[in-house]
Length: 167
Image (cartoon, rainbow, N blue to C red; front, side, top):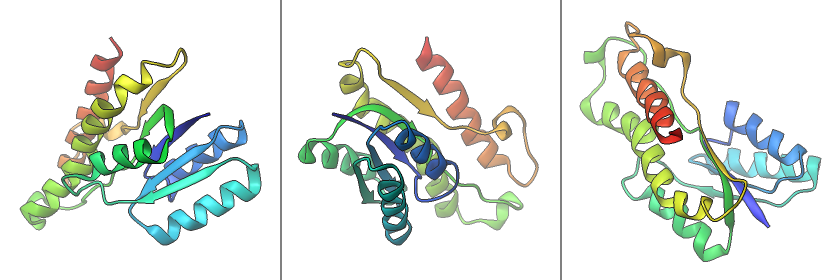
């Protein structure tokens, strides 16, 4: 049985996507940094749809986080045929308001984790006749957005990377 792995699935769009998969009977792997919210989401999804739900609390801004997610799947025997790269966040305000490490952490989550997870899981995904990757960007990725410029740039990256990967 293959799972849909969804990052950023403890709330918002990621949680809604997890619900959509589970509603269709698809087992899900939830990944986010907030352990308490992950537990709530996993219980809610399992109770409502009666599908298998597993979760891993990990901060995707950590350098080895994507490898931890991949290794968790492998060591637990979780076969993945859908990868949803949804985790992301933005820093709002003047660019100089945020220290460099905060900006780099956002870039790690919004871009580096997308590339790393795609690279790690793509060989496994290709083994399935029906598998796919869903990378969540933002309409902000279509424009330079004052006071949200770095976030917009990261989402433009996701959009362009996804389009290129599709080809």
